[in-house]
Structure formats: structure tokens, C-alpha cells
Image (cartoon, rainbow over all chains, first blue to last red; front, top):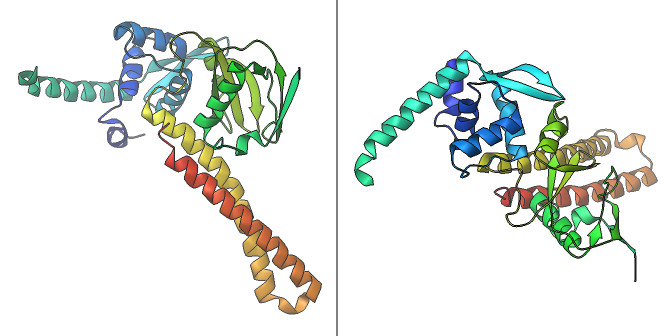
Length: 105
Length: 181
């Protein structure tokens, strides 16, 4: 998928997609992603099996992540360069939001 | 006391065509002590529960026509037990206390699950539609090739299929209206 298309589809990004991409800067399988995200958010975001499965399928289909290896029928994924580019763009958008909402809190 | 309970058309009654309702229905049955440990192809038509201890289970109904290889492994690792599938609807179960476990934890994937269910119904809808059109063409374009009794039969079948179409249409609309849950 072209970067332009991926941008249209993923930005702004759902919290689920953001945290999955963020987790996949290191190779992980679905369950490890859930654990990592749970830890990062102090237990606020707990991804379910169905959500992880369908999100990974979508991200893989759009070539933002790829399967690097497999163990016990579980695929281990990692972010692709295109995925990293989209994640960075989203992070820039979020930090702009953060900057502009400074006076509110 | 009865040890078994058979339920007919469980998938089609009491709003159970909406996956979230079907899940809740399974959960209520389990809470009353009615259990099913395997589901198979035809269980949407009839389903037999055995009596046991009341248990607190969360069920998940997930329609997957052609799941990827890691589908089952992913759910199992999250602690779900696969009861099998009826047609292409997988049924998962997890015992819990306290917070009720979820398999779909954001809006996109809940809507996605319901959309897949509607898509499956739309396959039957399309097949019936094709047959109705086929019969309509036969009636209007080749009337001479049909005897009076052929005509009567074709019209009767078309009427029956039209009723199916209306029912399937209602089912799709009902799931769509409930797509957020």
C-alpha cells in the first residue's frame, strides 16, 4: 500500500492501532502486544483477542507490519518502514494536539 | 429433574441474530446451570445443553469465514476455550469472576464483527435473490414453455423465497442497528 493511502486510512489513528504499532518496534506476538500495552498504560488499555487478531490482519494486509517468524502457530510481527513512517506522523500529530491543549489542564 | 435441555433455532430467537445477544443468552444459560461443551455445524437449528453447576462464563460469537492460521492460537493464548463453530460462527468461552472479559475492546473491532455477521447473511440473501430473478425471467420470457402447473409451482416457490428475503432483510437491518455492541 502506498504511503498516501496508508495515511488516509490510518491518520488520525485509533488508540488500538497506535499502541499495536508502537509495540511492534520490537518483534512480538499478539498476546505479548496485549501485555506490553497493558503495562504501558497502567492497565487502562487491555486489548482483547478478537481486536488484536483483526487489527494485526488489517495492519499486515496494508503492509504496515510483517510476520518475521512463527512459533507454536503464533505469528511474530514487526513494524515495517512504512509502518514506522505512519507511526511517526501520528506521533507528530498527537504532540501538536498535546502542545495546543496545554492551557486546558 | 431434567438432565438435558434441547433448544430449537437458538440462533434465530429472542434477538439472538445479534451476536452480543447470542453471547448473553449463552451466559444466562450457563448461570442457570445449562452447559454446552461443543458446538457444531447444525447447532444454530438445535442445541442440547446438559445440567451442571451454575457457572459464570463469558461467551464470544465471532464469525470468521476463512480465519488465518493463527486465529485459534491467538484466542487460546488469551485464555479462551474454543467450543467449535456453527457454520462459520466460532463460539468461545471463558470462566470469570469480577470484570467480564471482552474479545473486542474497541469500537472498530466490535463493528467489524457485526459487519462480518451481516455479510454472511447477505450471502444467503443474494442466493435467494438470484433464484427469484431466475424464476421471474422464466415466467416472463419463456411463458410458452411452461404448463399451468409449472407456473403455479414457480409462483409458489417465488412467494416462499420472497418471504425468506424479507426475513433475511429484517435480520440484516436489526444487526446493523445493533452494530455498536
